[in-house]
Image (cartoon, rainbow, N blue to C red; front, side, top):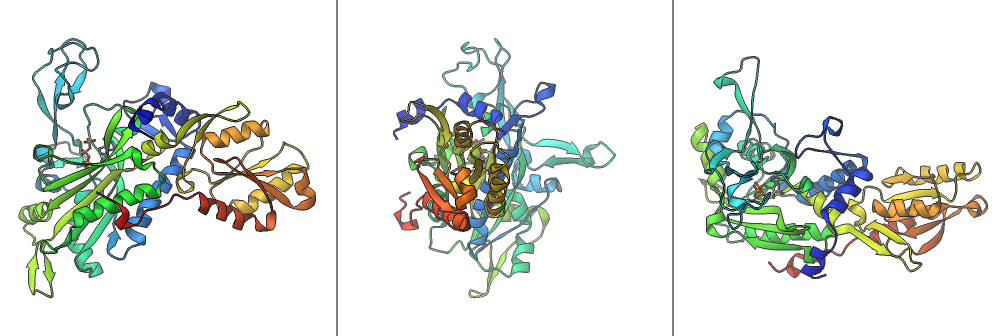
Length: 455
Ligand code: ATP
């Protein structure tokens, strides 16, 4: 697939519409006219989100012995945000269009032209706008009760560095990972779930010895790309982009973004930042606690450096929907919309479908469903014609359908249909779980080895 094919492919509207129609993502508070850039995840969306988190946790924590997890609180002592630099430097420049009153980020205006109404050069002076959402904790609303909803999960790892290191006795290099909600009072929120004010992050702080000759920044760029290949994303849809020096955040020594080709062009999916010793030093200076690491070999205290891969769950989901979506014409001329999800990210892996809604077939099909349900994310559907039900399962990306027909009652066998090839295989119910598993494994994407990845 070339860049042009991707751009010309599917519209964002088609994805938003499918996401709502089938229960992936709904606009929030729709019955009250909605709420800007807030979305609720429906029954299928929530299954997918869980899978994304689970696959990240699996790769980042469970499959490794050098990373551990935490869950830190969303609202905490405001001094954390003073030390991290968020109170002073976490702003975006905001401007208003004098013609249409659109509120815009002045650093995103191209050629001095309003993206909403097209008027040229008619903007208010840009003013800095802090992106943290503010609240008050406790019954008294005054300066002493001000608190912030965290704009990133990363600081939870830095403020717990000592607790984690001492309780786990981990030696460098080691990482601390967390998945959780973050909040930013974004000025512009467009493009569906790409940029919202409430979102979920998966972040990992990898602490290493500044004298370690190994290049951990490059290592994490490769590992994170491997993770996306594991999710089945078309590699042509991803690219790495190094930040140039003027783009770097206040804490960063070097940052590379993994970008995705979304419907509107390339956009950030994940940031991989080399944060140096910025965060631990800043918290040590503000708290008066020494956040160093004692190196028993060198017999000295050192301040570790940090490499951080950070990504939003919602952006991964949008990428997967965009990448998997296809409208196809079948050999018999029928049209279908299909999500070509890798089995691990599909909301359902298997659908059990009786050939028709029928007194005789129903109990047999339910018995098959009982065999499948504990082992696979699955659905049961007996409404309308079988053809329609295949289309419905294709549209939500279910890799395999198990059809129960009248012969099943006699031969105790069912038919497995593959979403992508549409090939059908007859298999006995006693072997069904094993055969389904073999099919799903065969549909899993190939994951290149670390050394095969060029960054
Ligand atoms: P952007 O430049 O798009 O605003 P950022 O560079 O500020 O993003 P980071 O602070 O690096 O983002 O956050 C890490 C990740 O968290 C991002 O790569 C993105 O996947 C996700 N993320 C950040 N802001 C949002 C948001 N408003 N909505 C959804 N996801 C977000």
